[in-house]
Length: 75
Picture 1 (spheres, rainbow, N blue to C red):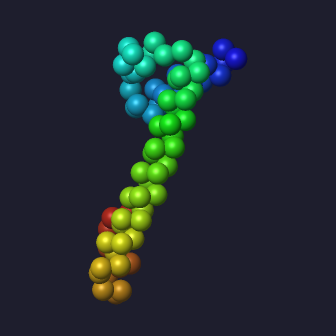
Picture 2: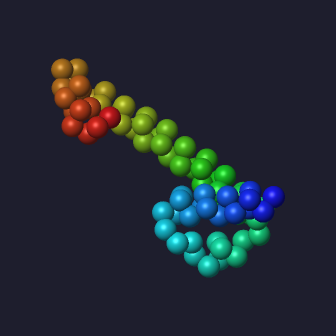
């Protein structure tokens, strides 16, 4: 169980991409796991929405330009 608790804190550090705020470090293990899961879920939704917005934007371009623009933006 301690490894899982440490894993949640490590996952949060990766998601925050740096040191955690003291308030996050002070969370109990269950709350840290919940926060890590919520952030993972939010990033997944964000990624899906960004992909959809990019596709919508590309649909506004003439078909011949779409592959070039995809390549330029790395999509």
